[in-house]
Length: 131
Image (cartoon, rainbow, N blue to C red; front, side, top):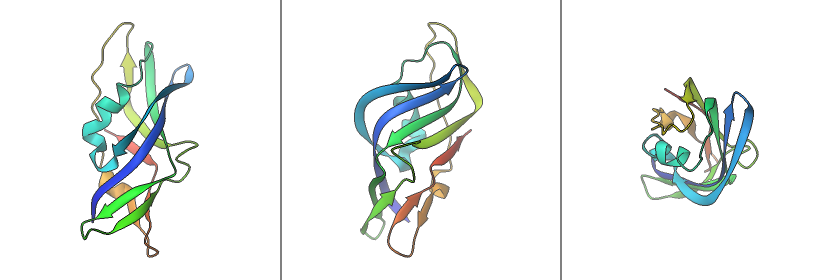
């Protein structure tokens, strides 16, 4: 149904054994349809101290843009996007040792996250489980 779905990422938050860490970043546009392949480059924007991490939040603007295969442009809404963001649960947790460089890969069934409403709006369910 969707040809593209773009949202503007404002910050990255990562939950570890010592609580939440917030990484201010240079804001960037993200293709949600390519989140699986772009996940490593998104996470690489945050330099993590050693620890165990089980959730990543992408703090985004509440509204982006979706394009359907028929060419229609529709608003893309991410509920609480600017507050709690798109939540990516990591299972198993990501473990980082001191000074270690880690390559992160994740697999998502991202198409299941989109809901096209009858009013011409696309909603993105903001909780994603990484495998």
